[in-house]
Amino acid sequence: MNDFLNQIRLVADWLTSSAQWHGDEGIPARLLEHLTYSGLSLLCAALIGLSAGLLVGHTGRGAFAVASVANLARAIPTFGLVVLVVTLAGLSTAPVLVALIALAVPPILINTFEGVRGVDPATRDAARGVGMTEWEVLVKVEVPMALPLILLGLRVAAIQVVATATVAAYPGLGGLGRFIVDGLARNDYELVIGGSAVVVALALVVQAAFTALGRAVVSPGLRVSAPKS
Image (cartoon, helix red, strand yellow):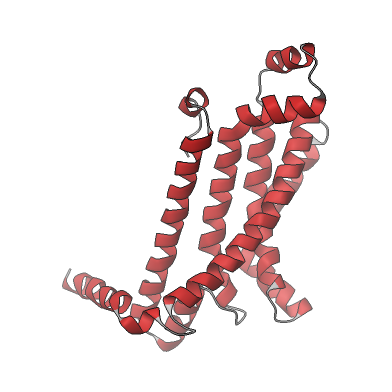
């Protein structure tokens, strides 16, 4: 118990030290690098996952192919993919982005597809009956009703990307993972635990942000029946 409390005290001292909040290797600089990798990856994954999920969900065509590709992508080991692409393409940000995009696409794609396909067919027919085009049915009817699941997919993807972006440090790049990698190399567990705590805190902030976004944009009636996981 005393050892645990000592570790907590050491990490608290590390986090509150002014040296950790300045310079190219301080928490703000590493956090900015981490957010850059995570943000770019999530943006690319959202463009892919949302586009494919909305298209297949609305038309019903290619559902089996989407599910198969998404499950295959989900099974790819992120760290292994980073190492493979670094080996083939050389050291750059590309391997990290490819790996994180591959990780983030499946939950966005599957939840978007399931959300759109789960809309009551009678609601679609009623929308078409009043003269809506297929685009209007998608944008004005299906997307608003599927929004809880769409946001769930984005939230899951964002948290996974933020947590997994620590792999950016392994091929020699930056981000919060640098604290963990350097700490392990030096046997400095204060640095490892401190870096891990910052990553966990960032993931919790992302979780809270998406929860607040859901409350702001999802209608109360849909929010009641939305998945909680």
